[in-house]
Length: 254
Ligand code: NI
Image (cartoon, rainbow, N blue to C red):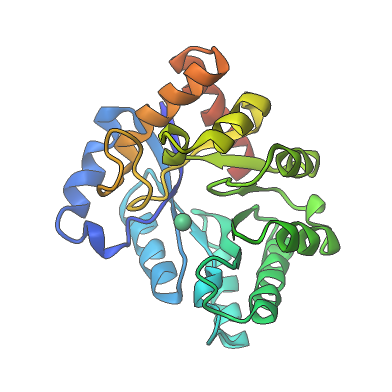
């Protein structure tokens, strides 16, 4: 069964049918889901979701677009949530120079500060990095992130960078973009990287795969992502599902 490593079911896009949708997951082959917090509100909702659904686990962290008003008090609160049994990662944390909502030094400061939470708790990190390839790698190297475990979520950089991350022991998160006609660079990375380093993820409600591109995404569509990876790698669909599930279980310890 499929392990969904990155979704945002706390998003308002699911307000109408969240419960109905989540209850259909098992019947459609989705075994476990990590709901990823991105804002303080999102982390709170993630904590609620992981209490309510046995197959939903949580990642707690603040997305770089949302770090502007963070305080040390907030870090204490996040730290306390890290101790919950179903919290399996710190994330999503990182740098985003595409939306560029916060000053780069501020983004770096809170990226580092949240990596500290992972160091303190032994949790893996879920890294968000957009249009910030060099700085993300530089910050992670300076912080000895090779001593942590984690995933580069929605991987969007080059093969060379992928090699650097894999050398540090990191996984690459692959989602809907791999099915896009203009997803050539990611297809090349998927061809290059061993299956042992890939994780399946949606980033739902965003980035729905073909044939649903532009619509609301959900974990049920991971079948399209797994099929595309199987085609690229000349593997069977079952092998892709099985190996990525084992990768996720190893990384997140569940
Ligand atoms: Ni996300």
